[in-house]
Image (cartoon, rainbow, N blue to C red; front, side):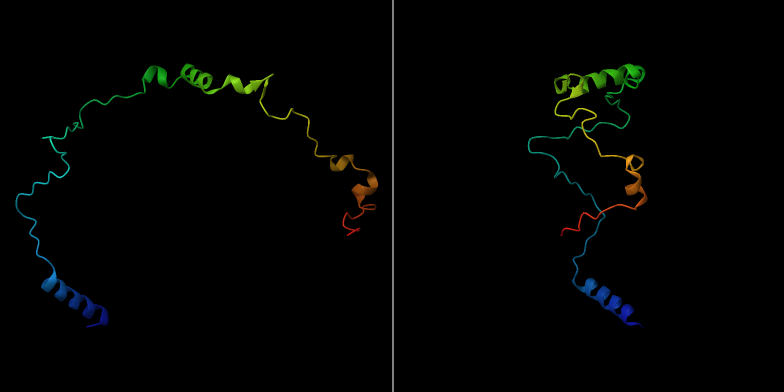
Length: 118
């Protein structure tokens, strides 16, 4: 026998001697889920109809989507055609593009390092 099988055999022997015997046969009635004063817990059958909020002809339609969007948009946040606190378009410039730079700078003939003074 290997060490692993010896260990398992010893473990099985210990459990047989020390573990509590449990016989699952018999009548088992567990009503611990029942609240005091209640005799039964109502259970819905699987075949019973369920309330479904989706109404097939109207719920998945463009009209319903438009209504949902109208309800979702808060008109109070729109000021003069733009969202409040948003910067007006065109107010930020990243600077000139490479083709807008002077020829000396674009070719690399004239370009000074910004770290020269450090």
